[in-house]
Length: 417
Image (cartoon, rainbow, N blue to C red; front, side):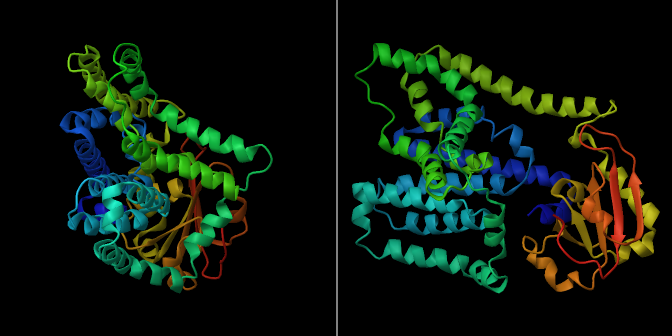
């Protein structure tokens, strides 16, 4: 999707795609709130989500987590709708949104488990299991996913094998400590919404105990995926990644929003609205200014690297004829990516030179001409390669002492560890 965005309008379109993802995510959160308790809950859930980490700081990283978020929110909303209505169309909508979520990232399996338990517990959706629509929808999901399943089979399940190799097994107390750390990280990511709602929650506990709480559905979709991820980590001893919380906490603000929308004249509402507007203005502006300011120092942030100038320098040193012969750009995600988005010719990106996670490059790998890119200290693997040409852009930053590049001979094969 990032490559398509760059092809359509240039690198800036990538940021538009990220904003489109979060806007659609907000629509799903709002819809879920409307289904549960009405428009007020939906609006406050969106407002509080805008204070969270995943909807602000991490959003500029247009990755699988960001792409997953809208499909998670829409799937959850459709799941909640199925617990309240007897229509058939939400089943097929859920099949489509879940298939897209799984194509974005395999962590959507926990979305499937959460929805399965939700639909099994709720009486209305449980009765619908006696009709053909859930099973036809399941067939639709498999139909949409079948090209990907076929691709996995053809490529020997390379992404799954890569994930297994990358997963670090927990030992001893880590089996409990790491999942708890994962849950704590998600709480910290939503510390601003929690602090905004804390007075309203305490007020509700003291003065209005007769009012109902958020309800089990709201709590289940908010906390279910995270708790299931933590339980899976304990059972399999596979350490959970904090970034999995991006899509998994997509409806985490629903229970918090319940307490705000419950108080029609609660003065904190106005304060919260101003706070959200301020944070939404300050965070992106602050990050942008910090990045810009760092470009005037001798150790700028990575976001301040002059990637276009770096690419132009490499192209100039290579010459147009040699540059056109490059078929693969190889390197770490960031090092290679900042050059790839500006590269004017058709090339394949190969993260770390690992064909298990880049199976699309296998067919042309052996006969291709590879441009290796790396930053920081001298790369031990790159040192073993014989380069037809090489160079280094001496650009100091807080992350590296320059960007090195080298053209590997066609016989240089293997994986960059």
